[in-house]
Length: 514
Image (cartoon, rainbow, N blue to C red):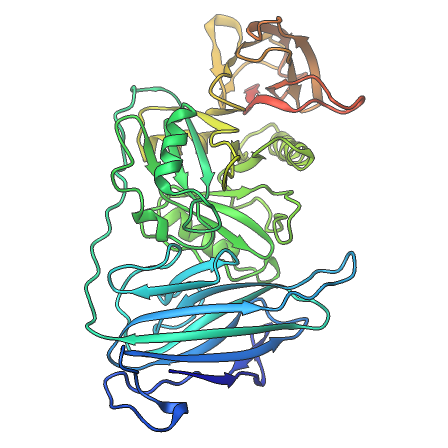
């Protein structure tokens, strides 16, 4: 049984600094009661279902999230939601309508609270939740009586507003049971202390990707990866979706891409089942709280594609809380070049007082692959880790003992040597006197047609074309007085005169000086 119930504004509420639209509650009859002749309060039909369709219009300037309350009575074992909205044509340069959706249960919508039950953004037009299963992106579990909330996220709103329609269907029946989740193990067989290749930014059908976890695992193995990290937008539903897909050769970490309206951040390698909220902007000064939550869950805070060009993708929270930064995201593009330059500025700032007591932020690269033909493992972060375990891999990324390569075909060995047998590798410091001679050495394989560059706090100071085979060794002599750090870049030939070629690989720095 379905009735049409228009939903509009009761008024405006001011919560902190945010103005919120308040929507009328959608009511259902008790699922265990007899049918009522009143269509507005009718009980379940013969198949145990009740439905309500509600309509409204979100005006320009709506808050980031609007909550539609739904009274769920006793005896319900499934909630199903379908929605649609109008997409009118808009003038060039004007944003049209885009509406995201998610669900919170009777425990409420409090920021960082326990009520979260799923998010699909704009990737789906319908979803359901039951005790035993749920639509990808949503968390299976009991459908308890109380006021649930459908979260509507007006990503962009056309000048004439955003008309929407939501249909909620409740099904009565036995409550069912929730199977215990099976999460990936925290270690794979590994090779002891070695260089391990990984891709820590991937999307499956559990957010806006089109690949299944099984397809991603197969592609990761084909790309020569040793580890991957799940990073669905604003949900942890995918953490339990990898059963049977890990192995001695593939470590699967669990995480989330926290997709705020002021930038995206990877919660990398968090404890399975960890949810990190995303419903805040930089002006609200709340990110530090959630960065600490990521750390308490054992994960790393990694701002993703900080100069991405999509709406809301540009990182605006600063890097004080970052454990690393995703400098290279997917196919190398101008926004990656900007991110690389900004990261290099961060390095300069970290050594401007001699590097003592100052934190530096390592760089990494990931594919952000969503669907065919997005390649998994392009690029990939190559980490020196004590073993193929979550703890060791995250420690290597946090310490900057890593480089980024466009594929498993590209390998680098990079370091600096001084007097009396001193040597430092990627992410380390070579303690030498300011005027002591230092030899920087880079070994490259798998980069035909490329040129190697040594970049310091002054910028690129030395370059050398690699042999035609793409494999070769490049050396350069310097001092700590001349170069506070040295890092390596391997670039393809430029396609536009006067502009740098795309990266084939780059390293984190070796710092020089005492």
